[in-house]
Length: 120
Image 1 (cartoon, helix red, strand yellow):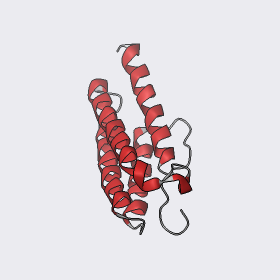
Image 2 (tube, rainbow, N blue to C red):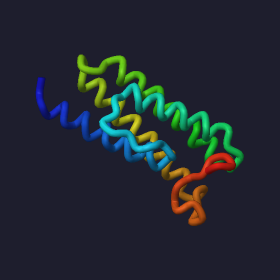
Image 3 (cartoon, rainbow, N blue to C red):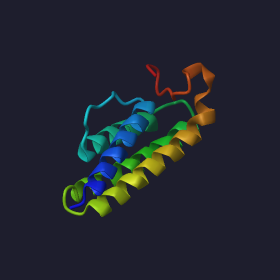
Image 4 (cartoon, helix red, strand yellow):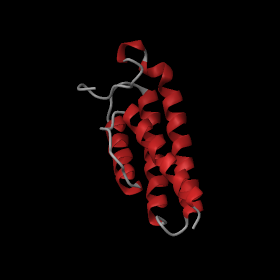
């Protein structure tokens, strides 16, 4: 097994962690794909119930898609690294898309980060 693939996977996991923190996740140290999938699904649930507008609910759908990609990556962990990396890249792309969609919805009052619910 090539070390290049492993480093690539680790870079993708780091990117996913940073992006999920943007959406309100607690920072995770050295997370696995399963843990990231659960985090994305939990965030999707919070966003889905938010009363902050349609942009937040669209982000919830994308976060749910991210969770699905991460669960798929988790099923292949350690065996088919190119397939794992493809699912991780898809999850990153979905998070970037969700973040771009929230760019105008978040506004300056939230410091660029979306707020969900009353506690937001």
